[in-house]
Length: 129
Image (cartoon, rainbow, N blue to C red; front, side, top):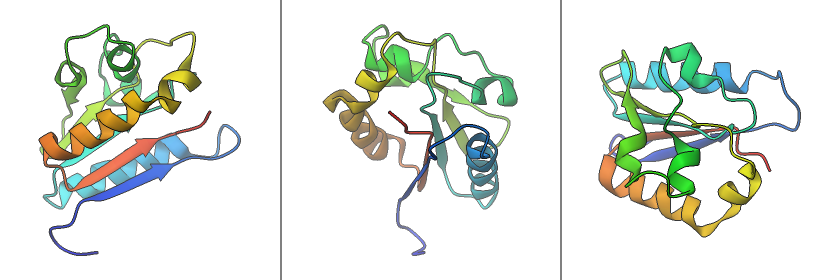
């Protein structure tokens, strides 16, 4: 991997309990410990878990950003206990997670995050629809 290149990873599977959350959290944590600015985006809007494991609130997150319930995505990014790790939790469970993730707004959000956050490592957790 090139030193200054941005990397985006997506972790997904066809069934639950295969370790997606565990792997995403550990990849993000370890990569941030190397000094690389990292953002973990929790895309599991059916059974969100990342917020609890990191001890964060889940009242604002990806679902509220994609459904225009907050002014902007910056309102949904939280700091973690790791210096270089930011997290966008999934947010409250919406009635239509597949629609939110498959829309143009999600693609636009990811592109905006890449431009503005200047993170070198992106982990999108559980993109399943």
